[in-house]
Length: 525
Image 1 (tube, rainbow, N blue to C red):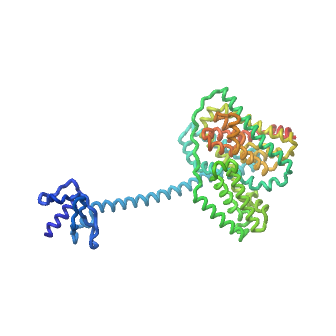
Image 2: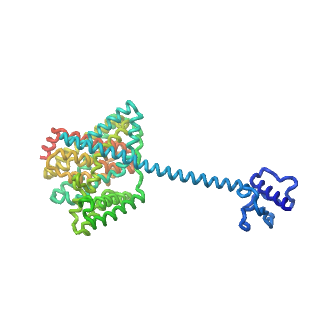
């Protein structure tokens, strides 16, 4: 009886794991009890999993049991062994996947640090060399021309090397693109200090020049592009795809929030723990600026039309400075003075952010190289519009400033209102007696005006061509206007990027000529 029971058990197990095999003749299935090939494991008196009949018509009242398995096969069937192997494989894949992700993250961070570090170091070395040689030409602009020339030479001789160089610096370029608006913020944060000595009447005149000058420059650039476009009649082609930086994550928000809270409390308790007040205030002022930008970036699009992320950014930093001034009983002005010291030996949060402006100019070389085919194809429209709009912007500002009776020093300070901050500061440094803080603030405000109203104005002026829309936007409102337009009209982004770079480049080259500077001073009076 025991032997028969064991044979039945073995046959059922064999039939379960090998359905194609049939019962031997002497164990044929009874007529009234059709055995099913589907069995389910059950526990019985803490013994191993057993198989019981699961037919819908009749069920065996007693499960077929084996009290003591005599082999390892009965202890773990093929299904259990397979499951064990699957668990082992999945565990190995999970562990290797986690290790791979961690190594990729570490490699990506190292790649970003090295590539960005090279760009920043190049900018710093060039600045020192130009200062030592008493050269007044913008050092970053010279570096941009060098990088662009190197890329062109490599592309014509060893294309793979040019591609490899572009890929190597891609993380740094994405970092600069992602945080670009932050580099303009310091001028707005310290605006209360910059405009304090400016009379109210002069401030109103400056505002009129900003708004009216933006509209006039946009119109000149757009109509020039349309006119030249009709003359050359070049067919539009697709531009090189422009990569978009990733959105801000919750981890970033929490990290910067933690930095702000810890450093704010530390600065209150130990005002000079890092050596000076500026260095001690740097972490929480920088964190407040970054958090303001992230919050402003996440605002609904309708809100951002009125409350641009860069305004949110500046307000956040000013509120942090105000709070620290209140709790430390030092007042707002000293904290804002620590925000932007303009001293390399004692930098503040604003100095750190503005330290990236040179790298922005160097990054233009890579942007122009990437769109070199587009530049070559539409060179007539692009270069003509940029040159005309830049000359118009400089001389019209000088003329209107004189017409409105604005002080000469203030008029000269706002001459490069339509040129990106990095190069605008280089341009005003070529003149004597200028207010660089006012220059940066006017440039940023011009960009904000363009960012908020550029699309509506382009539609009102009936600029339909993406070339005209892109060039007009960048020539009148530089980076901020470019960012605002490219969100809704990505087809205009390449032309914005090209005009944005060329506008600053040509303006710097133009003002580097002594005769041009003298003529501008003559117009200003």
